[in-house]
Image (tube, rainbow, N blue to C red; front, side):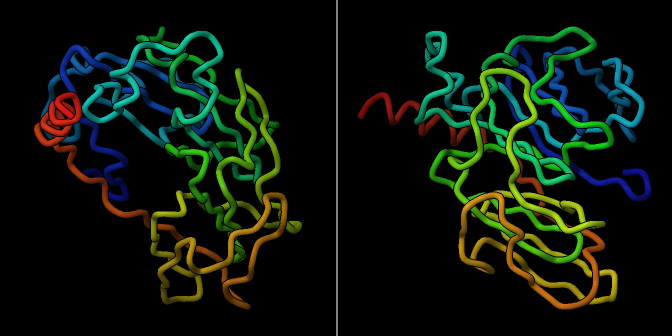
Length: 248
């Protein structure tokens, strides 16, 4: 890794499957695993594979192999069904506190170098997090000033196309969303004034979206949010579980 860099995701899958790369500008890029150049050292800059906009960077990556994304092993839903429960969706949160849910089905196929849009942004805004959720899951957003809001994913609008979404957390002047994560995840928060703390959905009581959230501390801003390290996908275990499920 180059200094200051870190692993964002570990994606497993057959070489005939794809990786969907999601960016802070609201674009989804799909590349077949076999088309990712084999390399050593620092690897290949993703900008060599796609036409990124100025300031565009990755915020999430997910594979299409059914062993890591079981829904892609099912028949493709009829038009509109992919927006219904119990299909899992992806939830995206912006720096200004907006959020939206969307389905990955439109991004299943290999894209052009310009990608496909999954969400829209107001001028000066960007997506800070994108992650998989089910309707009953809790989602959390932590602001730079240390306010935490958690609510159910179902409160966030599920869009049939790229849109602005709804207000997830209301921000005070000068504040911003420092990060967002599933409620099942515990993150480590480093404060600008020194020290760190573990934060998860249990830190506050889930509320309705659109509020200001609960204050975790009186003074000091969030310097860095560290998510749990990516885990290596166990494709063999997933395949065995799939076969066992068919037998049952």
